[in-house]
Amino acid sequence: EQVHLALGRSPDTMAVQWATMDTYCTTATNVQYGISESDLDNFVEGECYEFNVGNIQIQQSHHVAYLIKLEASTKYYYKVGDNSTSTWSTIYHFTTAPDATTLQSSLPQKFIIYGDLGSGASQPDHSSTIMPWASLEVQTGDIDMILHVGDFAYDLDSNRGLVGRQFMNEISNMSAYVPYMVDQGNHESGYDFAHYTEFFRNQPYNLDYPTVNTLNGNAPNNWYFSWNIGLVHFITISSEIYFDHPTMISDQWNWLKSDLEIANNNRTLAPWIVVNAHRSIYCSCDSDCGSAATTLRAGVKQTDGSYAYGIEELLYNYGVDLWINGHEHNYERMYDIAPNEIYTYLSGISTQSTIDPPATIYIVTGDAGNDEDHEEFSYSQPSRTAFRTSSYGYSRMSIYNETHLYWEQVECDLSVSPTVVNEVIDSF
Image (cartoon, rainbow, N blue to C red; front, side, top):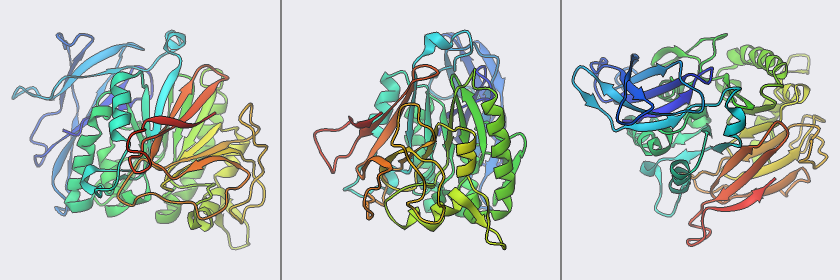
């Protein structure tokens, strides 16, 4: 159960993770795969990791296997299970990422992006989520990847982890077919982020700072890391480090600076740079857009009154194209914003541009639907904001070439319109 994919560090690798409800990893970690559904002629053995958080949460075994030396832009079929007992899952499939040879025929690249998605186990009767429509798009479209920018299930550790287990099974009609890339949110902080860290062990973890520690023990660092897919360099960072693990701030900031330097030198191959985290650097809904956003934007205040380890200066200095976050349970697309005065939520300078913008464009997409309901806007819309709504939905990003990106917001909210859903309400 809980089958989900993640991209590797190169187009020829796919990481598969799943769970079994046994203890002490008594079930083997095997994958059979191939380019024909009737002939899964490749076999790989992975690793198993125990998960129980000191017997407080339900015990699970998490299995991770890496499929390597795959052909680019190729459809593969696979099943997971235990070869020794002939116990196998259903057969799933995925398409590998393009390489330099297959890239042009793989355009446009298509991504689904959202944050703050709850589980059916945590939904009130009046609520809705994007799952029916996003999963249909995955099953019927050419989606290359999903990016979930924090806050899962509400919460992964709720009811001894049963809510998280149900959530991981609910998303498997998407995550077993396309890579499901993630970052951690504030709702993952239970047991020191143990569930997020273990449930998504298959992310392409950070090799420079390779481990993190939770109440389940040491694990690969999937709190901040990066990967390439086609024309895009994606970077996941943890906004939660600024509030829950301040001793990690400098390491993450220095790593981000180094990664952006490398990415900038690779613009010929991956011209688009997208950075994502959970919390906002800019927004206009409520107090989240004040001191917490200032901390991420400007950094930590030092004893001499200056600020250090701010994210915004790195985004601007290295020409990051998009910053994407969740946390606010709404959607807000801003224009380009360049650094200016750092103390208020109205700081920053915008040319209101979406064509060759001179600074990073900021987007909040945290309205996938959860039991905390909609989040309305209590502040007036600033001039830097192009569009905002509190209705549930998800975002699409399409990369056509090295100069053209197309963004859409899809509304999926039964409380707004029971009859008209899956409708594009914003684009640029």
